[in-house]
Length: 228
Image 1 (cartoon, rainbow, N blue to C red):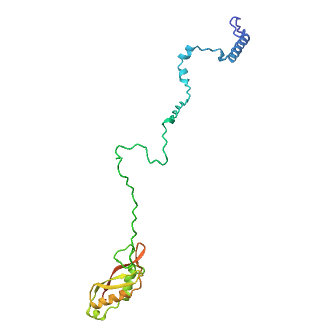
Image 2: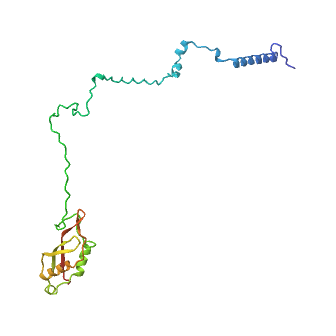
Image 3: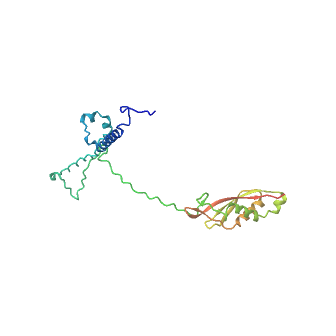
């Protein structure tokens, strides 16, 4: 048996008409929304003042205006009546004198003192000078020369005499050995041999004072030692 609906209960009736009307209304709303702009929106001053975002976005505009410099002071006018023309030959000197300075105090002009240059006498015998005399390559070379050139006296060797003889002499301005004397004696034979070996030394490098060669006293120990 076929079921039939009444016309009032039929939902398919007028479907296409309502669909078409809905499409027209939808297109009308879309058209109106595209054409709508903010130009028609107006604000009043009271609305802007009450809006907190308005003050947050408002940045004050400042200007860096340099203060003008004050004008320079006007030049001091010179009264030509007050000018005092001083003669070139006049000895008067005008000026302020300090109260603490006596007006009648004598003027002391320092006079340069010439220091006389020290004169180095070659005949003076020095003990200590700026550059002491030196034997060839130094003290080690001197000790080597003495040990190689000393001849032990036979009498002193047979008697077993040994010791240190101290000899003092002068190194001349040309490095020559002058006036050797024994200042500490051990044995006459040893003293004689010490004087001989000192006198036979080659020339030394002379001592100098202020860059000039001078005579210098020098002391050398001569050691005599027997070998066992």
